[in-house]
Length: 81
Image 1: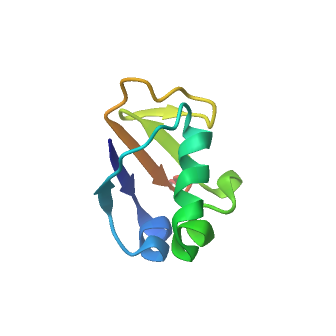
Image 2: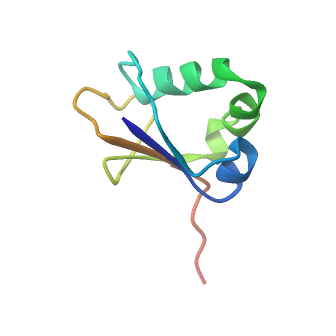
């Protein structure tokens, strides 16, 4: 699946997107796999209260299933004004 990173998440990981082979059943499982990869992922995804998730371009929570999903995006909360 394609994993996208935006704003400061992207800056901490050092790339905007990547193709990921995963056996993760949920977003939470994917986050755990990514954090175990390297320190940069661990730092960027350590506080999931400060990161939002979209699954196939729909806002989702950490328990969202990943079966059949093509894209997961991680980004900080959006602000407006």
